[in-house]
Image 1 (cartoon, rainbow, N blue to C red):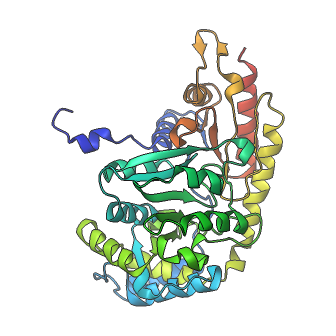
Image 2: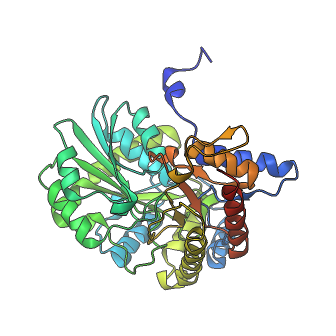
Image 3: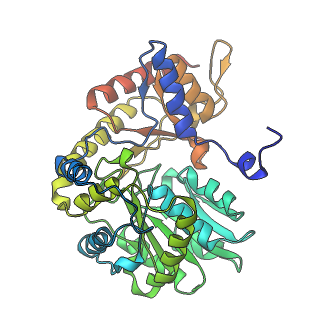
Length: 397
């Protein structure tokens, strides 16, 4: 539209949301679509969390709170950071937002000036680049491959930093690859960052509790770079609370204050009832989340086993989140009738039409040649989906 701003016209629609919409449209027509496109747990919010929210409604906790969240909530998040991550963030360093996406947006818009560089390892979460666009920054992409477990090395980061670098953005466990950075790998990255005190890092840890290798490691644990790190987290993934829309950050005080100021002009505080629910979630012992974590690991193993039975597909061993990110370029150039598969976007459209399985193309994550499979659904549906995918791919030649 000619009257829309250049800002909105420059933004791309989220391909995960677009594929989910197409799935709903086909389902409405009576087609049984198995959607493996959205990153949404199929578990329910814990009963203890729901009860606190219901009590909050009945007790009329329905007024504005502090922009960054009410004090007792931020204190509970501060205790969670100490308990689970050994990170020392005071309540004043916590900003609660309407989802981790807003937490990231607050930080990007508060730090990045037009033309400043933001280093982003690829594959990356779909919204990172769009938020950089909004800040008029310049994304510097560091590509990775399945052979390196989709992780950058400290040496690669060192070479990418320039005098224009302002920010680095990455996730661990990673969306879309499921890769998890070890303590040693993060320590090596910290050694690079401590040489550049004006370079900051958004470390997105929203999948912290979906981790198959044991203890989650946070970048901010290294004291030498503590004042350069913004730690992002939330309740949507680990606590099955996507619709509650609550994320939070722990950051150096001056960054937290800036993000509070930014948020105050966009949304102010998030929903007071959702804040109460989050407060309850922060007090849950992480050991209570083991059952869900084990279910995700079983699903991962099922998907990997069935993918190995499909010719030409390569996978790594994702150690967290609930995604597999297979390499599928073997099928590029193949066709069925007049339909030719040129890239992973074509392949995903073919699979939703032919197999009635919704996936997300790697192009959405800066990784052509790959597709993202979310296994946040039942083993029965996953098994059916993998069978459909194999049958559809076997038709190509």
